[in-house]
Length: 287
Image 1 (spheres, one colour):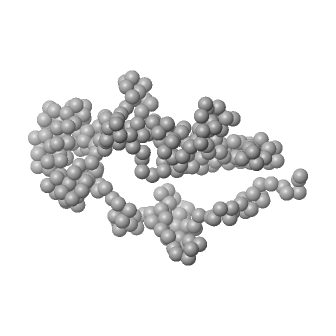
Image 2 (image 1 turned 90 degrees about the vertical axis):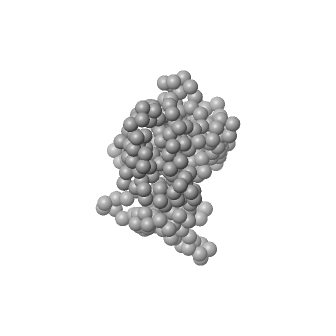
Image 3 (image 1 turned 120 degrees about the horizontal axis):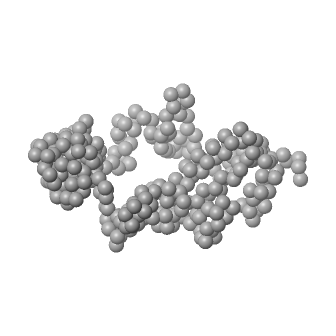
């Protein structure tokens, strides 16, 4: 924007109440000059350089990016939060400001666990596949027709899981009685539990554990569209499209007791709303 004569300084001089948001790969030099400030970035670059790929995947030889564009989406979410905070600041002080978000910083904030683990242990965390380095069992279990996600990190949940498996003695077995012990014997834990889950369909496993142990199926987009939870929570909504064919989009994940969240419109075309937002912000009578 600077090269177009639309820098923060120029626009702030025109309108001191202006909130100016910037999202770059490695941040705006005005808030902290990164040695990578001039590097271009996309989602996968942010995921790689902020450490997310270093802990995602089956092992250290196969780093993997997270499926959704986290490096694009999460910086936008944080920027929206920053803009709201800055607008509140304007209402209190009359002073606008620059809101700067770096894609790499945002993904690092999302991956925060690797920072304190490395600080405390001196060891850089590595990929754990679908399990957790500090909790067990906490991951995916194979079923007769797919997978079920199960989280039984507390001792109460573990005992409930053992009961559901028809193996109550595992709940008090010294190798498994505490989370620390289960983490130390994680391969045995998963072998025992999968010996049970693999005899059931995913639906059967979920029914056996529901209400006792946190669990859920691995849903596809089609599964989500058919899920009663999705419709009950209005999490898929239909909007018109310029092509004339309506499309489904994700609904509002935040619900309010007093503010409706059911009204949705399509995303604007490029530049469609520019005049609507720019005209109130600038006095066109000034040179």
